[in-house]
Image (cartoon, rainbow, N blue to C red):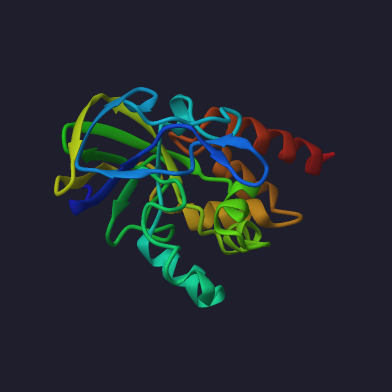
Length: 220
């Protein structure tokens, strides 16, 4: 029987399109704190994901970022003490005590009235550097596996700050986000380990395809 794990929604964030200076690119990385949201299959109503290649879509409907990852960022970049705060990296959700070492691919959680499933890690992009004005910040986040993770929405509904977050199912108890990040980052990952990731229940289809292609390449 799956051990019942319960957390709490500490904060929620949503945002409209803004212009990222000095490039002039459109972005959805700027979020505002909100207390209650309506969540559909593509995420929070009113929240915008500009570049659908990397953010958004059914497998990337919600993004969660760990609170302790901000501390690690500040330890490396002390000048970000006042700016690297929850909500600032473009996430939708803050939940204390959840991070890449405790969350697994395929996990199904109940967030208030919404049911979600962990689908894949986030891949940080250059817009993080641009927003914070720090070169190699996204590289550090990527190397350390601190980018957070995405959810797909299984059941739509309402989520509010203070709602319980309950783990309902864990089909891949050994495939944490941290484990996946470590395997994916290896120059020559083992074929067996790649197969374990590929066969993980709930893994995003796009990432599954890329891992299959990599396994095929390494196998030739």
